[in-house]
Length: 287
Image (cartoon, rainbow, N blue to C red; front, side, top):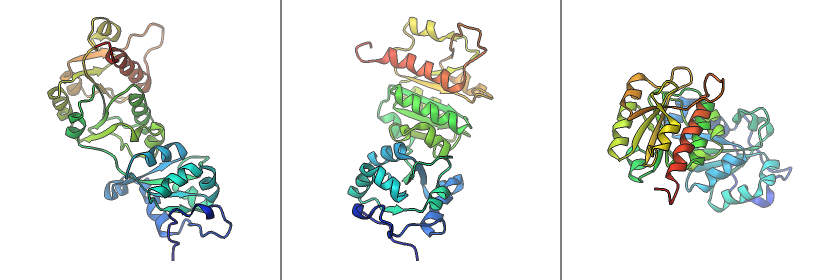
């Protein structure tokens, strides 16, 4: 019979006689299933791996459902363990084999949190009147998506929308690439990208499509004040770009100028340039 998760028993963390969950413990088996998108969708839960992601998740009220960790990691990151205990999060010591079953990295750092999904409806996100929104339209690569999510957070975006047949924002690689930003911004999932554009425009946001072949130069747009109003940026996949209909629905198609000999920028770099151009134009005292 599996050991009951320990709540608040920090004095015994790391003790050699403390019960530890194994790969066969039902709670570990259930958590391991969250590597699959189907299971994440069915349960509304996902895994956050490592102290950075776990710490950010613990700072978001009601998000962490359970904290797994090796005794050594629970001792090493005692502040996180204490934070979990204070909020009544079950703390479950693991064997190294059980940790390996729950993690996807080559050198795991010993902590994994089972988290509740944090996405919100598009209407709820727009009701908060964000001044900068990022839309990831049919982006399939989880590393790219997580990196853009992190960049959007750093640039001050209030919401990141995963639109159409996009990667699951709770994919393990996406969660890790976001470096905790998944818990800082409103994450929205919308099946139909065209609906997103209509809702953004109705909320008073300018809608700009990032495109390597756009007719509008980003620098020129910024120089003439074209970024001085609340804006939503649309980004498509590196392989296929934005769907043509979505790009046409935007107010303008904007290219990042290339001053050297590089053929193009990758998605994450282009998104960073566009989002920071908007962040600069929207900074307090400027508009």
